[in-house]
Amino acid sequence: MANLLVRGVDDALVQSLREQAAAHGRSAEAEHREILARALSRPRKRSFAEALMSMPNVGEDADFERVNGLDEAPRVFG
Image 1 (tube, rainbow, N blue to C red):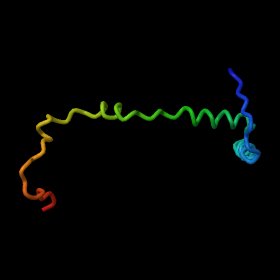
Image 2: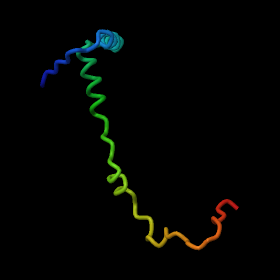
Image 3: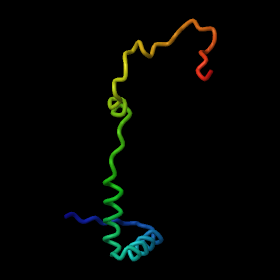
């Protein structure tokens, strides 16, 4: 396993880490590992292109054609 050294961390942040670690019954180092693991193991967000490609094929292009020449908007809700 690799080692990680973090320099220049604010004292208040280190104190909060120690307090959170104590509340969870582990060392500050173990708490730090857990925080990193949780933060970095989240599923990555899909790109817009990936989201579009995942949409099912729900019809033909003609099903979604605009109707031109209407003088007013169609009544949708009655």
